[in-house]
Length: 205
Image (cartoon, rainbow, N blue to C red):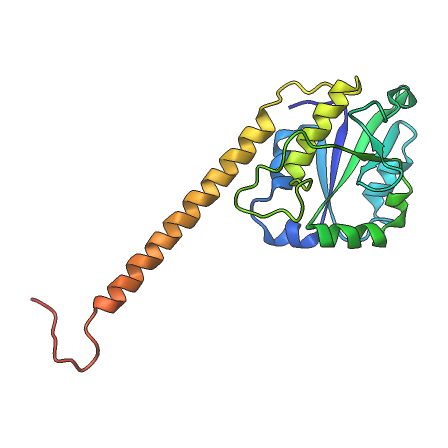
């Protein structure tokens, strides 16, 4: 799916290396104008520096806090873009890791910051969020694109696509967990019904 804005996920190494299917990866699989940059410190990252130093870009960080602009109520000055391309950095990590990554990359916190007010709580059923306003990376991107379109900054052509992929991912993971639990239960029952060594029992011919 095409968008005007470039979505850049700054992904913690734990998410990048050890997780086969994360919402961040799923986000980028569905957005043509997106990319993943793995790491913990980004001040000296060549790709981040190229994106933030390009005069044709308007880089921002999606990160809540004091001074962050609320997109939904017109807090983001769309006119400031001019002819530049909006580049939105999102930190893709657990909340504790995200805070650490932000501290380790002060240049990111010096960028203009955006924040969103979610329209609904997280749809995550297989993972508990630390607070009602916390969202997965995919959900945050969905809310971001909704807000950017409402503000006249971007066009979000298929508003169901990301959430449909998110639901499908969770359904697959739940089915996999259920199937694995069934196999384990069957194995345990089989072990309990097996004759113990030295019991005198012999297999039936």
